[in-house]
Image (tube, rainbow over the protein chains, first blue to last red):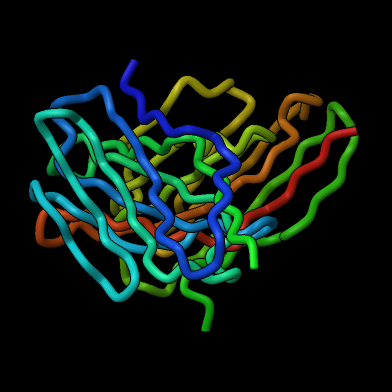
Length: 113
Length: 114
């Protein structure tokens, strides 16, 4: 069973601090990785994706990938109350459209003012 | 304009009924999906269609039947609804490009079976 594991949280971070969200995956064949943000009662929305080892930065967000350790993380700098949401990590198993994207169960992040 | 739209947004129905959820995407994507999100927030793929052809069919009861009349539409019909079918159903679409198959979700359909 191919899995994506996340700590369910809640993770509480003070406003302005760095929030660090972690994810591990079991399928070594996974090629691409995604972070989605889901507000309560809303649909998941893509924050960013990564497929190369190392860091990828987009504004206040940095995704980190370590394929050897099968580990993906998302750092949110200067956390804002609006960042409070559930963050879903996802892994894409291959290169074709028949590949499945497997989601983790999400980490609930709470930014306290 | 909403990229992936699905209707209805809320659906409350009795056990044993048959219901449908409709989905349309205007992104020009080749692939469409149905995902189910349960109360524990697990988002699980149910079906995937590529250019109207079924390519992923997870272990889903036969009571669930997807239909794709064209690549912009993917509907979900559910027969003999059960209490355990209560969940949020997300339609989504994607286009594989540059090693990435990024999924865009509709707003979800909240199904409650009573």
